[in-house]
Image (cartoon, rainbow, N blue to C red; front, top):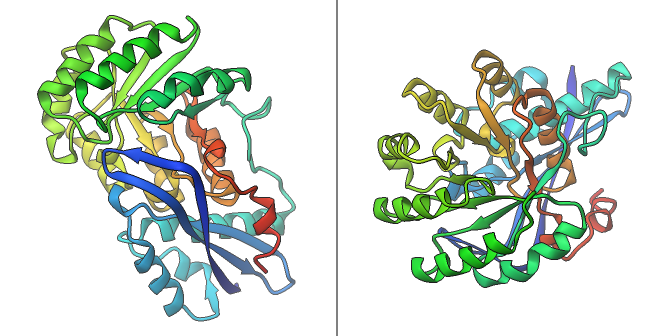
Length: 325
């Protein structure tokens, strides 16, 4: 079948700068795509690149969209090259939604609920000392798992804030620490030593070392009680395969919107019973819906999904989604 293809570039401003070891992030840009079949049914998808995580750049994704004809086939969608993983996700997601409408099925899972095997979200806290006040309101909203960015300030300062934060969190809370590859080996050891003292509250440390330090992260994962999760090291399906082949059997953080082809991701996760945490790249409700559908289908370890990010934006999604076309 041939589908009419349209796309729009959008931008959303964060309420506050998102601070990571990669730098500060103020505006989230992505591309909303629309496929229309011959009877007018519509499927939406989102291309939300994160180039510093290993996907294509936004410019590359836009160039790809501009080069496409106004009509596209499913065959063309499934031949999008692997160096455009965010494009693969966006187009396959739009096609999957359209096929769902064509068959009259309703297998989408936009939010965790009684029908979806994901009990809760993990909420992203602001970096540095702002986290000390931010978690309370999120707790009142129902969040029980939190993620805090580390590796963005002097380690002594961060460890002092961490001590206050971990002691203030209720006993039933879980905390994830995300270094975004920003720690040295000695700093990672120091963090793991501190986390081992609070192992009942610490779920894992995410990507403590750079992508090039895989062997040392594997070593660290065998030295401490605190679990290590790979994130930047497994951003794409090719990286997922490589880490698995090199012996990683710990936690894999999967960001579906930049991992690549959903069909290939499905195949990998079903072939290897990995411990996966599905996570956001600050996509809109369109990308989140498709990502959560994959999480509902492929999660097996009852971990909170990392999609507690809506509180980072100032603009309500429905105010612009309705005006795109």
